Amino acid sequence: MYSGPLFIASDHGGYHLKNRLVHFIQNELQKEVQDLGPSEYVETDDYPDFAIPLAQTVARLQGRGIVICSSGIGVCVAANKVKGIRAGIGYNIAVAESMIKDDDTNVLCLGSKMISEEHAMAVVKKWLETEFPAAERHVRRIAKIHSMESQEE
Image (cartoon, rainbow, N blue to C red; front, side, top):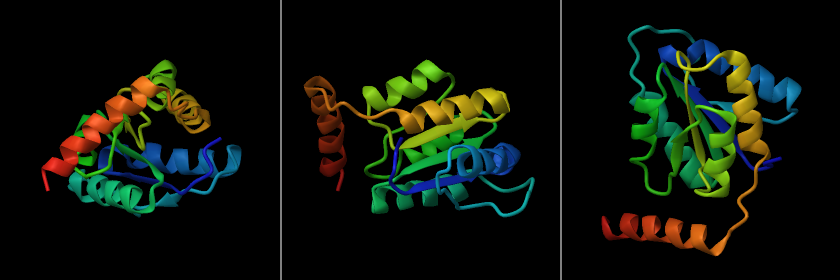
């Protein structure tokens, strides 16, 4: 099981699922998770206001994060704009495993309207219990992405 710092955030579309996942992670997985907001449901909030700070925190502290909106797409696009972030949408358990084994993702994006709470919990559990095996071909591919980020500076 992943043992580093873990963060979670959402917009209004993912607010209820976020709260359920915080409870699941803390009580059932026995893992600390820091909730980066929102602290209340606000129908007019915007996903970049939560996805980008989460991604910046994950990059700065070299942790992992979970970010949620209605589809998972908006938060994924926003998170991937932050240097050092490799975010993917966890739409099923096999993808949750693959996104660590192949891409060493550090942000899991979820769509609250695309996945049930039970399935989201299973995806989160698989993502947190999977380790990056650092196979040469995957390390090489991630290095190419990192190289592109460095060139943009």
